[in-house]
Length: 317
Ligand SMILES: Cc1ncc(COP(=O)(O)O)c(C=O)c1O
Image (tube, helix red, strand yellow):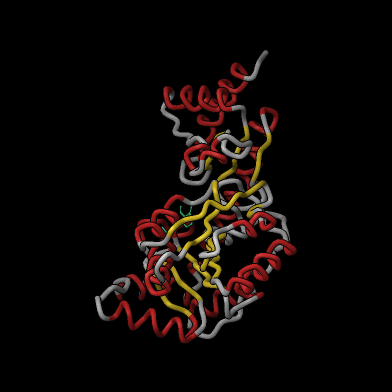
């Protein structure tokens, strides 16, 4: 009830309480649904580069994974026609592609839903960080556009912390009932005290306060990242979320990541999120993923300084 109200109020997603299942996070919700929907030979198309845990969860549930290409606006919907005929599901981070940061344009959203309908497939919409959007108009959730076909996944990982292991899944009431029954048999629900704590945070306005404060902080930090690193390469994904991606030539990215590691600053390579050889060799696997949320102001300042001086050296001709 409280989550349905939250989603209606903050995400424009109209759903009834019986269309919501409280989960232990995105990966848990996706795993439950994938286990339930599994059929021999079934394939799920997952963004590449993309969220590795989603691909790992799918493989663990016995699904074949098709690496779906993305660009800086999100999933390349125009390429979905060549996915295997066994494709029964799509996984997409439409509101802030992980890790490239694209906001999937409305025409692509509609095309994705048309393609899913043509194949009678479901769409997993991973809305992991949609609380944090800076000066851009919200785009309609896929689940709002086609509630019968979309399985919407939410998480508290980016608001309260990944360690809380809490999230929600929104889907048609019958699927929710089936998933609830399936997990009831094996006692696979998030602990009641945690659910209760979430309810209290939502009811007494604490959730809104946490999100409001974090959003102000992250917006400021996104601007700092832009100002200090924007001159060194194309920076993607600053309109939303808690990380930005700096596209760089492969050798420069590797050298800067190594310089940063030597200075005690952890900056993952974009290549670490790419799965297929084709994407590894393409323009969207070469760069750095710069998370700017989970550090103190002082550490962010220092980390950006380390990156700035390394980039200045490594990009100088
Ligand atoms: C793309 C994406 N989805 C979801 C999550 C959160 O997953 P979970 O709720 O399973 O911790 C993350 C966290 O880093 C993420 O990057």
